[in-house]
Amino acid sequence: MDRIARRSFLQRTGVAAVGAAALGVPQVVSARVLGSGEAAPSAKERLNIAHIGVGGMGGGHLGYMLARQSRGDVNVVAVCDVDEGRLAAAVKSTGGKATPYRDYRYILERKDVDAVVIATPDHWHACQTVHACESGKHVYVEKPACGTIEEGKAMVRAAKANRCCVQVGSQGRSQREAFLAHQYIANGMIGRVHTVTCWHYATPSDDNPVADSEPPAELDWDLWLGPLPWRPFNRRYLHGVFRWLLESGGGQIRDRGAHVMSNALHFMNADHTGPVSIETRGRVPTRGLWDSAIEMEVTYQFKNPDWTLIWAQPGKMVPYFDRDRVKREGIRESYGAVYQGEKDQLVVWVGDGQVYTEKKAVDYQLPAGGVEVPKSPRFDHHEDWFEGIKTGRKTIMNVEAGVATAFLCVLGNLSLIVGRKLAWDPVKQEIVGDEAARRLMSRPQRYPYVL
Image (cartoon, rainbow, N blue to C red; front, side, top):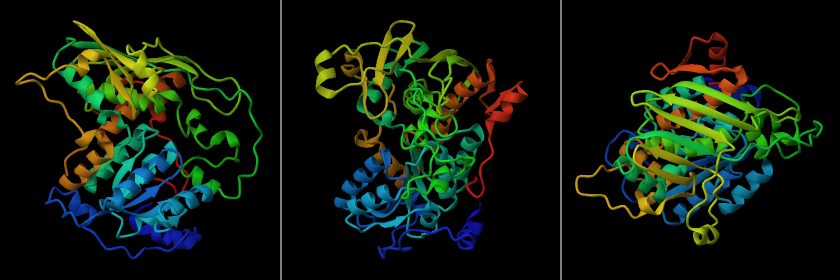
């Protein structure tokens, strides 16, 4: 649905927004100017930010932005959620100052909104990002970036065409010890890396299925489904547990894999390359609604340079070396990656809001003339996004990088679904030589929630 048609659609169908259309906050410099590389706005000018999806991670993002608002950095002008309970709580957290909406499309029509934070279920990420970019809004979108190959391509096109700064929420890249691990590897301290092995625990199974039912009164079930095919409500679809369905989530590989493999691509300088083959074996559920693989192992082969990426679920966990720190900081050792080089190896634990690496990398001092690697300002993923908006430079987890990581997750699942090894053209970003698999690079979207 294009920008011109969206307003007429809303009026024609009577989809209701919750709250007024505007807040009366001062207009700030436009999103397009901020993203154009022109001079940054003065300290008195703030970004007007709207939040789409305010439960779970969305609530965390809102809390962060409200803290920034208290320091005079941003204005949180609108919040949106299809769950009225979550929406009411979000409005309350803003002191009643943010305008509430049930339907995100009303937010995109506001000329005073410069940027949006999208933390809706995974199946909404691509559609909402494309629509936001078409409306001239900068975007922070939770991982994984997309659910299909064609969705990812559409995101990249929309961000580029509309000169919007997009940051994908694989925040591990912005963590201090991720930077230190990256620096250590980039300076050849373990030699040429030939294998990266990720480990993670299994995806849960729906061992006690429940019957379909009427959705709760506070939930707009149609809007929650959005681009997905319509189906009856079931408590096993939400909240949070949408991750365990292929349509709306995709299992642990698309959840935590979007963190761990994001760092792998970053450290290997492989954001703009891709595997040439993908081969998956695994065990899928035999009952219940959740259909993502419980166990799986995916092998990705990269060329020029040649290296192998492995997603092992579950894999062999490497215990963190500092037991006192594990207890003190609540480090989750249950996922991470081993980077195997020709001279040595390096372990990087976790990969999202927590990243930890070995002491040898933490203690490493960059020599004169050493390789410098990207670093987010103050090791803050949101701050990196703000800098991208102000300066026009690419963020550390820009839309191309976020989509490249999401493609790894998507392709791992597709190889398991079709039951065979896939060949991938990383330049054209297409499955080659397998027409049945190629058809799964996209999927129908339910009108009007379409790209």
